[in-house]
Image (tube, rainbow, N blue to C red; front, top):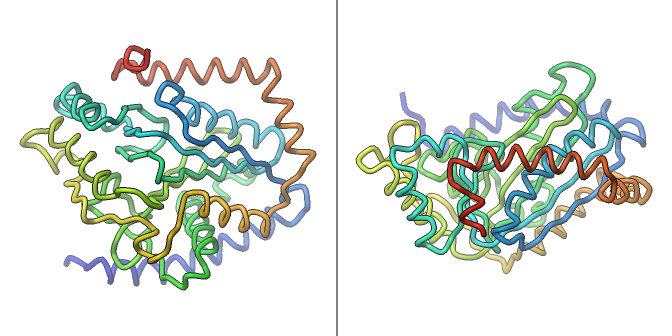
Length: 316
C-alpha cells in the first residue's frame, strides 16, 4: 500500500518524538558538564570553484579535532555555482556528458566525501555542519538520532515562523533521503552524515533564497544527460524541479543566508558555550604544523576522489 507524503510525515513525526525523547536523555548526559558544552565556529563564505575542496577537507579535520579536544565544532559555508556530486553520481552511464551539462549551465562539478547524490551550492544555499566528539559509548548516537537532532536545530532557528517542518523522503527531489526537510510538501533542505573514529559530522544544506527552480533544472539536466533513457532509474532520482522550494518562499519572508546564519548562531549560543579559549586554541591549531599535515593528507584524499572528473584540470 502506497502512503501519501502527508501520511508519511504524520507517521514520521509520531515516531520521531519517541526517538528524540531517547536522544534528549543522551544529550542531557552528554551536555551535563560545562566542558561538554564548549563549542567553536568556523565560517567560510563565497568559496570559489578552485577552492571547492576546502569545506570537505575541513569536515574530517574538524571531526578529528572535535574528538581530540572534546569540543563541538559548528561549520558554516557557502559556495559559488557548484554542483556537488556524491560518489554514486560518478557511476552514471556517461559521466562526461553529465559534466558537460553542468558546465554549460555555468556551474562547476566536485565530488564530496559524504552523502550519495548531487546537491547544488550557490550564493542562496547555506551549508551548516555540527561536528561533535564521538561518544565513548558505542552507538550512543544512532544515525537517526543525528538526523533528528539537526531537524530540531532547524526548528528552533525558525521557531518564530510557527511553520510545521516535516521530515520524509521527497522522492523526486535531488538527493532524496528519509530525512528531507519540507514545509507544505516542498523540500527545502537535505541532511547527510559522516562518521569517523573520533567525531560525528551532521551536515545540512538549506535552500534559503535564489532560483530554486533553476537548481532543480540543473540537477535534472545532469541526470538526463548522463543517464539518457535510464533517467529516473538505477537508484537515481527522477528529479522534478517543482518538488523543492526556498525557505524565503515557503515562509513568505525576505530571508537571506546571512539571516539564517544569525538564527542558527542564536540557537548555538542558547544550547552551547562559545568558548574564547577553545576558539583561540583552534585558531592556533590552524597555524600549526599538525594542521598543515592534516590538511595535506585530507587534500590528497579529496584530489584522489575527484580524479574521476579531472577536477584539477577543470580548475586551473
